[in-house]
Length: 122
Image: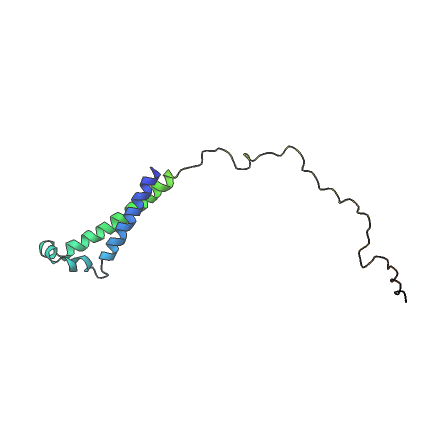
């Protein structure tokens, strides 16, 4: 039902756009294009129809919007999100301190070795 109401709102909005585009600011928009209707019904009748259609579509959009707000699908789960959250039963393991590493000398700190002896003379 909600999607039907949304489709009706979109349809009313498109029709509203078309009717507003037909109108002219001084009231002669639709009347200028249909000269035969002007002779039968007069210019004033066409303007009245366009104005009534605009008001009717505006009221329909308001009523349909209120109906859509009433019909919006609701969440089926009762309660809050926090009530449905999983509960942790055990305490988290704390990271242990790193074990003491034996001190090793880096190459810069390594004890100097004796220089190789000079080559033997022949």
